[in-house]
Image (cartoon, rainbow, N blue to C red; front, side, top):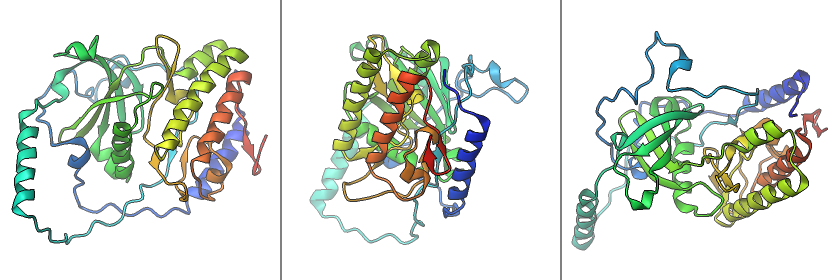
Amino acid sequence: MISTSSSQKKNLQSLLASNLKKLTITPPSNHEFDFGDVFGPLTPHHPDPTLHSPSSTSPPSAFLGDPQVIHTRSHSYVGPSPRYTVSSSLPLQIQTETEYEAEEQDDDEEEAKPKIGPEDFEILRVVGQGAFGKVFQVRNKGRNNEDGDGLFAMKVMKKVTIIKKNHVDYMRAERDILTKVVHPFIVQLRYSFQTKSKLYLILDFINGGHLFFHLYRQGIFSEDQARFYTAEIVSAVSHLHNCGIVHRDLKPENILVDADGHVMLTDFGLAKEIDESSRSNSMCGTTEYMAPEILQSKGHNKDADWWSVGILLYEMLTGQVIIYRDFQYV
């Protein structure tokens, strides 16, 4: 079984806390961030009791069947979004008549397309909960043949929470990256839209559960099973790297298993586009799966993902993770 001692966890927590203190967070300004360039224009949102959070008098567990916690696990850490101060003066842009007419034509085509919003989906149940919101299993009310059974996963994030935590760029990057990645072992983004208070990502619904659930239930995987899962994870990660993307939060909870037993990478909230010569100094990921260079704030690149893949394989075969203690993995 997956086991870590409280003293080892405390060492990890204190190491991260000391490194996080060195980070500089830009104070949020009064500027109202606009997600329109990635999530589209605001979608009119009419009150719907199925979409609202429970009242303050209702217990949290009463909301649409919140999933039970079956095991204590470390959460993903995320440093501040690398946002620069928004300039109050914008450069003057001069458009030619031809460019203006082309933009008008594009706008007309956009207006002709049917808008999609929260009311187009029926919420069935809660399947996950994170720092910024929840993930629901939903059904497209007006599904067509392309949607199959019309089932999707709807990730709902509160704008006020994202802005308060200074994670605007992470959320924008997640949507941007999902639109660029197409691979059989990576969850696909189908729709994205926003209302005045929330952001929505509609993704394929993978009904086989998290890899962590299967590992927790079995204890360990056979070599053949671990080899099969790892090969598909390596294929997906290689594709991400070829697209100039590093995931940075590979762990069993972020790997789904579909009905046919194939893995699907999900949760790109900490992913980043990075070129071959660049290094990122962000402190992010999950402690047990972080590469040494991230924990020691030395800067990291795509190689950090391969460290996480190695930890995943070790965990599949032994049921345990390698613990970082006294600047060594034990």
